[in-house]
Length: 204
Image 1 (cartoon, helix red, strand yellow):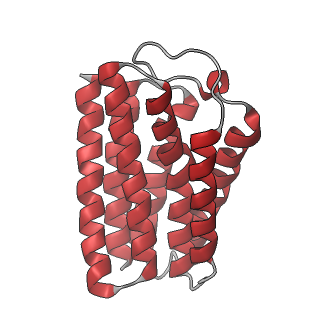
Image 2 (cartoon, rainbow, N blue to C red):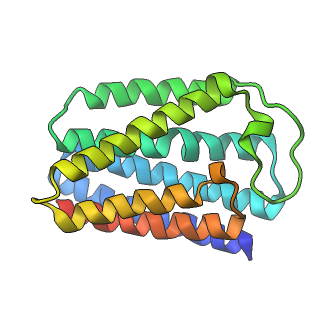
């Protein structure tokens, strides 16, 4: 059941990524592309969760889940919000950050053995420096950008901003960094993806 829930979350996230990409192709707004990349990362993290729930956690599954879930999703959301606010420098900074964390996720050494289908505690497998500190900083700055832009423009886009903030909150509540189970995390990912997509559409 956990694997099916995680797979459903991945399907929902991939579907919403495609819909958002279609909106970007029609409008060519850079924030839509950044948000599409964030939802795509969200989808890959969900797929990695489904993989691990079905076959058991492995170093490869953990690296994929950590890269796309912990390192990329929130920062890319923040890049999209900054682009919406007219901060064009956010695009090259976001690309530089993405390249950095891809290399980090591939090269960083993992500690301990992986077993079972429950989401691993990152503290048991990753040193705080560099991987976990980069994730903490990236998520904090990305979330700050999303919430800051949402609050600054709440009067112009009340519904869209409220939905996006709700999506970020649901995703944070369900992330593996808080040690919840697979079923709860998968359900949170699916709900968060739907809220984020609805918020992106409402804001545009």
